[in-house]
Length: 599
Ligand code: BDP
Image 1 (cartoon, protein in one colour):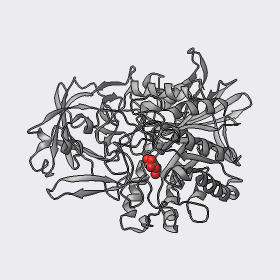
Image 2: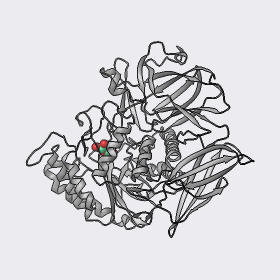
Image 3: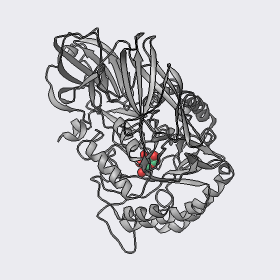
């Protein structure tokens, strides 16, 4: 295990301070910060909140679109040494970061959507002020997850060119914590759940950094202890277990302690436990042995001004809107979201398909309307960059699973979004990633990946790796839109017919479908971009989906309008939202609310 990803907590042994606030920042377009010793202090900084996506705070285009190296700096006071380790934890820095403590390099991390921790005990000055400097880089290339390229313009400035359809928000986008943890500490744990009649057996494993024994206890919501065991691994039996269910999310508390030889406590970590099982049987998805139909959204972490920064208030609004439409599920398209999203989903009883940032795995200037809709095969997985890409992909997958594996809300992992899967090298690339996920996830959740329009039976090489098939399909938009909607329906039916033999034994869900819609636009009869058309397009899609009993879920694209790179295909962003970017309903929201009430 690379690092402990446990979310910070406070108790008799552990404490943390938030380092969020106003930091200093400076762009480093010549990438010579290191040679100028910026790690010892930034020469000409401006102020910047942390966490934040820096882009949308600026009024100047060059700053919003800045691509390259940039630096952050802050200082913190550390009280006297109390014998515990001092750990610096970044919720995420996009996309790569080198961290310096008092001018000395403490570590490097690549991957913009997962936390990383650095043990800085040896680098800090106790009873003193300390400086953190971070050199960040937000360039995209074909080994980065997500993929893209970086263009150098005539004046030498760089511009990110994503192979994906969302803005390349970057910076220190999630919270920074300074943790103090005991030298002998709980590092990680796993749980796997089996239901036995009305009882539940929780097998657990705990990793610690020492040899002392561990105790495990489960408490119910009222604080009553319901079972206990000792040992770094073992089983806990909950009699008459209250299950965790959709919109009925009962959570127990699972407490691990490291005990010394006299029974004294060395460390303690309390976690929430939702008792639920998830499995695919034949072509059904079973939650607690009962079939569940997935209804909901592909989302983004995206909001006006704050970009990809997590906001409890925006997230709460999103959950309220999702509940209002009777949804039960969302996919974290196209990257692992801030940890707080999963905590909220655990509480609210929402199902999550957790996606690794493997998007843009084809050469196209934007990840839409590409290969399938007339584009050409780019043979992405035959390039020299592929071994390094796969290494990064594995690391991102491992970090996501390590971080999210104990959330009851997480019911599946998605290993990719719309790669070029139409030739055998794609399968060679993905098979080891699926194998890795199966090995790492003790709960053995179903695995999937969202397939692009041209990944159809006979052409696609990766659907067989998936436990359920996920299709992104734009019949009525990129394919046969507007006046051709009737033909779109026929073409859509023909494709779903072709999936039937595969789906005799595998569930099929739609992870994307929809139509760009301008919130202010109305037209009778409808035209593309008008709200009436978004409804008609959804009605057509639902007619088709309802005719196939192996379709087990529908996640519309997208929950809300979101920011993308500028271009002729996008009107200040992608407008396929059911809600506007500031979270007000388009007409389609009422259609979904009604449909999902009955579904
Ligand atoms: C799919 C992508 C998604 C895009 C969407 C669209 O998975 O990221 O935003 O299409 O074009 O290709 O709206």
